[in-house]
Length: 458
Image 1: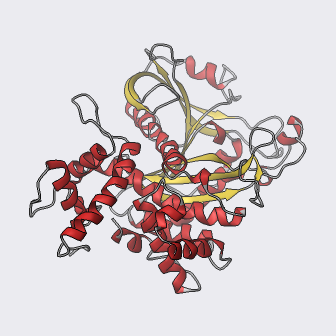
Image 2: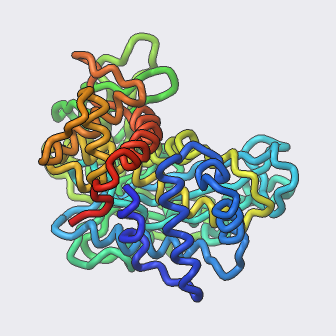
Image 3: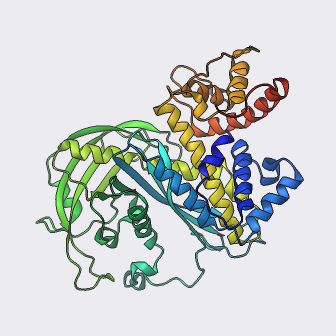
């Protein structure tokens, strides 16, 4: 598994080349043990000290790490006509880490930490390609502004500008020959985002929260769309929410092309004009017992002139939950909130490193589901899959030909506790990262017993 780190970080540019080598080594160690502390993942005191020196160095810029990963993310878009970019924000709570400097306030008074906003590229096969954009910040603790003051504050001066920054980065980073759809949840339902200038081929698909005024006899968005006849239905997979597991559900569909009016009390000024958009209502027919009815109000700049167009938008929006899974892996799989670093700057460097590890774990999970027929050597070194095969099949003699990626990931998940019973479906990220940790130990032992096993590709 280690060989991929050097390739992934090939485009990283540091002033000191030694920092690049240390970064690659740190990613390798953390990928082997993503849920372990830095000292345990590094395995020795000398490597641990080197890792902490790296994370403390002012010459190491977190943005340089993110840019290197972004370059590889764009390369993985090759051959794909459409790219989805799901963006979302999560908070990292470091309240118990009293010594850390530079932290900001969180949603609950008295809590301290950082916010992380990520924009992740996704292929139409739902395989995450990597991060296009990420930013980290500490919220300034200050007296709460009144609701009216917030309404009259320009978006560029508020945290909500992050949704627009993600769009702007996508416009500059993703090749012009790609059609791009920016997908976001209700926090991104802002007039200013819809009004932001976009290049041809770059679209928005946003879940609406505001019942906006529209140019329509019904006056408001929800009444206008509900006045439309039922267009049809669609079945989509809905991600895990609380105690409700992921499941497939059926949604009724209505849609309408309409212009949304600018807000009464906004910072846009009197020159603001209605913006023509498409609105889709997707409403769950039969929700799971004890769960509220799923209702998606989607606003998009994509053309929606028939049922097939609306179904396409709903299916693409259903991929948005992958960014939530990504943040789940970052927090629960990599245990990023347990870091004991002394400042927000050091935490940001660590987050930029762990973010790549978290993406790798998520990518591996979904690649095995969607393209599992390819050889497992896209993810495992020869001695790793040999050790894996021998362990699962209780044989000292692995085959000469590597198994498929799907088979290998299934076996890794079994090491992590996945039972692989009929009806269990595909393994999740959690069992895979647990299995990878066990595989690391097994493969190390295998290599000691079989020193002639190749440890690099080709």
